[in-house]
Length: 143
Image (cartoon, rainbow, N blue to C red):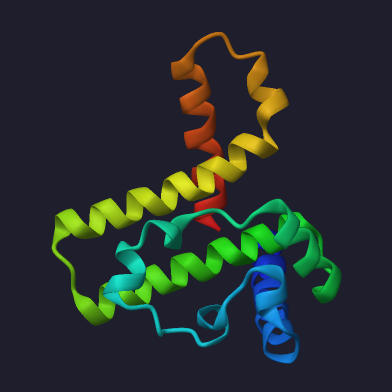
């Protein structure tokens, strides 16, 4: 409960900061500010589900006065919200929707891989590492 509340507040704080500051300076474009404007072209663009670079997250965090980890999570919430609104508005086929959701999951798992690299180093097999990432993703996604 607390984590979900904190993430929501961080997300809203980052959105507010984007409106007040030059968000392009730290790698967030106007689409981050104007929710609901994601189009089919945005979703199909390979760069839409690219994780936010660490340097941009650090810069955004400094301006918004939150940690880079919190910026990454807020950015992922934005992407999830954009995906949700896109699926409501455009009603993509189930295959297209599954492909977009997979791209979102991979984006989040890339961040989790960086975050838990040390913890995963001790796991013996690729399957164990994948299971660890899947569990971490489920914990993030569930709140």
